[in-house]
Image 1 (cartoon, rainbow, N blue to C red):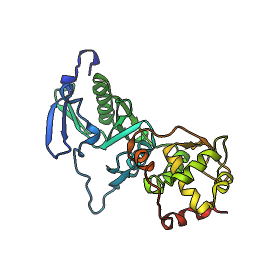
Image 2: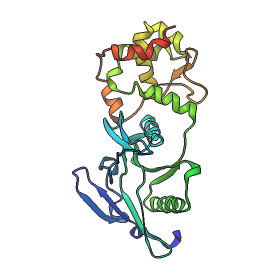
Image 3: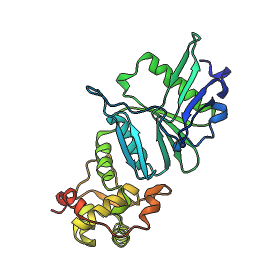
Image 4: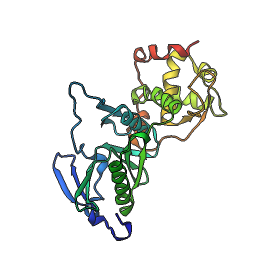
Length: 274
């Protein structure tokens, strides 16, 4: 495909609107659609002997469920949900099609569409480096080209860093706004103003069993921060003030939620009490 002679009109989009209506048209016409709010373009299959794991992930950013077709896609969803610049996302957002070099119609459905707080868009394909066949490479290249024509960013991602992913998965367990307690959160923000060890700071606020879930929620929101790639979260992990998350269901709801039931968090937090 010659990028110098292509236009957004050479790519066709097909998607299912939030109302369940299937729409089709040229990319140049449909790119303003809020694809972060559309339904999946195709269903997530489930059958005996299936080699991949499909499911639905509850996104704190969206305040609802987003589908995935593999554990690797699920991990990428968690990372998108954790990204403070992302304000919305959808899985299997549209089917892109174009005419290939041999005159045949080629179709591709990207894995995710994400909207950022500044209004820009990101299209994501998830595929490990060692599982990219020649036709896959063609599809990824063409999709990147199509995205560039309408000002979208495109990325093809593989397996994330193991330590980062383990830490973000842990924090994702505390992503729901019900974990937030405004009073405890305010004291944690004060304690970690100058930075300090995770468990030492938690004990300055109160009982670790009650305080740790709020700390993890603040780390998820990135109101507090730490180096999540340096090692697994531990008692001596250095924690400091971060950037308060802007936008998304998490940030909005967290400011209004005070009551919380600790029984659901107690078991997961016990290893931090020592």
